Amino acid sequence: MIKVIERNTTQREQDTIKLYQQIKPSLDEDIPITTAVKIAFNLQYNSFCNRTWYKDLRDYAVSQGYKPKR
Image 1 (cartoon, rainbow, N blue to C red):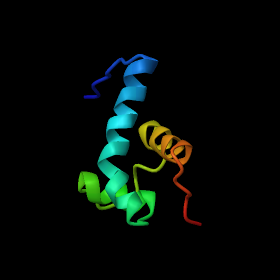
Image 2 (image 1 turned 45 degrees about the vertical axis):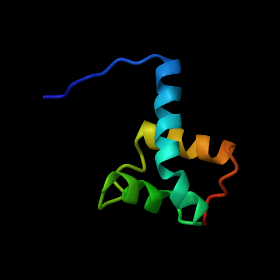
Image 3 (image 1 turned 90 degrees about the vertical axis):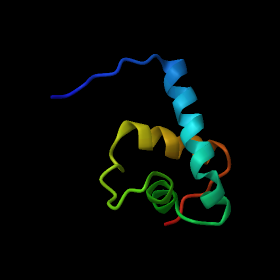
Image 4 (image 1 turned 90 degrees about the horizontal axis):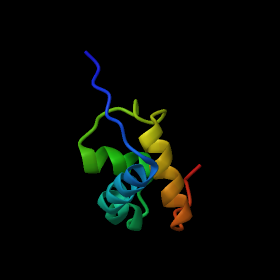
């Protein structure tokens, strides 16, 4: 069963900022964003990379000065 949670744009932005605050210490240590997410949220795989929340988080991190690793 899939549970759908409705959120407006403001709520999504607030959630993105909260997620960013959780991964920021790792980003400050020059850890790539995917690794920082795995550390902060105890994930093993990169299956989250195509999720909207991750894309929003990545875009927000870039807007805050994060430079993605290639």
